[in-house]
Image 1 (cartoon, rainbow, N blue to C red):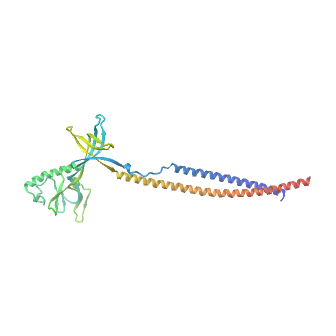
Image 2 (image 1 turned 120 degrees about the vertical axis):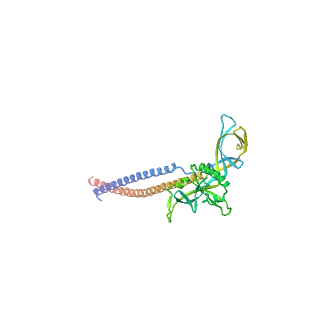
Image 3 (image 1 turned 180 degrees about the horizontal axis):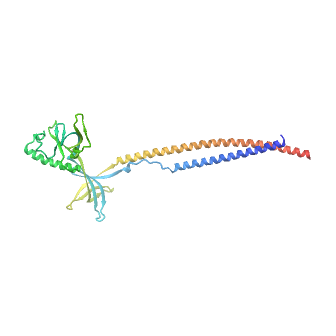
Length: 342
């Protein structure tokens, strides 16, 4: 190889080596960027809050109750009276079973005939109107004059009960249905506003105008009443738990009741909290999976860059070896040239 050719080859190898080094620097820069992205993802993971399942204890509270005959009273608030040391202000919810109260019954299909309302062959009548309809009402036909007078008073009481409970006004309608087993007649009541409402009326195949109307009767229902701000004294045991309460009446006298302790869990609130936890957990797991997938992509890209960097390192070693060989050739050519002219 001549000196010119050797010089040209050496310069080409030098340029090639420079390119390999530049590409290696570019790869290292890319790997640094990938490392920074991966670190950011790991920091995001470290900054995430792991969802914690709710504890049923957080939705469970201790309640105190006392019985006054058939009435069960559950204490809803117990506050110390700052103006009267040793005294308390207590609020409680009274619950009892009312055996004679209006309750909902199955709805009825009512046929509208002008101003009359019929169920089957029975025409509904207004409560208290026991005279004009006596000939058309099977139940009224079984009653004496004295019984009809008493029924009028009874139905006026029914009307008052119904208006009070269902926040209505006006005179309700009624029909009586005989129990086939006992022979007793049971009253069924209908709101006047439901009967006159035209929005729920339809026409059947016979052309009759009918309405689906809510129905009510007399039955048993749980009744509650909240009593607030009663003056009271309380007694505790050695553990600090309340065991007795003395309530002050309007005459200033105290009546003492034993307190029963129980724990009540707000199951609906606990279920809501558990559903929220399941949602948060699923969202957390999905986010973790998405981050892990991104990190795996970065790791694969970094692996490819690492392999390319090794290839460049091998290529640079080969170029260096070849440059050393060319350098020796150039040195020999130079030495032989000077000897020739020396």
